[in-house]
Length: 204
Image 1 (cartoon, one colour):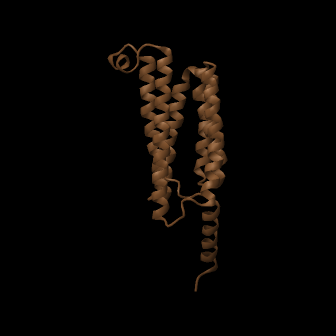
Image 2 (spheres, rainbow, N blue to C red):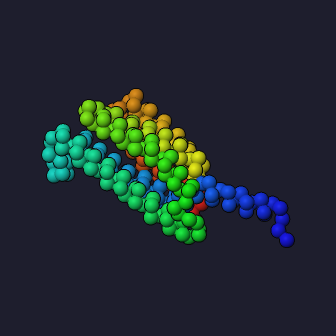
Image 3 (tube, one colour):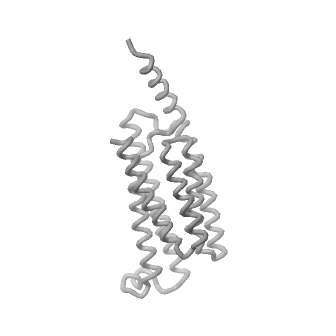
């Protein structure tokens, strides 16, 4: 005969599965951080070392071309991060016998991507106005807000990750000359740190 505590634990687990997206992969966060590191490194090299053979080979010394190539790098990083998150989270869902496309996962994605989409559109407005120095701050701030918003529907660590992104974004807004560094810390370091924590706590 099962103890009441066991029954309560099972009920709690069922309620969490129905209201929270628990298949989010920590390893996907680590990979997203690595992609961001690589992207930030390429951007740093192109911006601050354009006279080297590497810089001249890939980017003619033209401001407009530089901005286009930086946007292309950011887009590649985004696609790789989203693709890894989708594949690894789906694998985790199958491994744990959870439904991947559930009402909880849809609520999580909606809560995350509304602020992220707004931030992306606002970033394009900044590009249109040649306010490139604020793009790093904008992406960090809106992404942080998206994570905080989505944390109600997934693992609690996501909220702390969002707060960290928000803090770095505000810092980058006040000190835009350090925008790329803040971007690398937010999308790189914090993703690796929190992704590792989530992997060792939930994925193994």
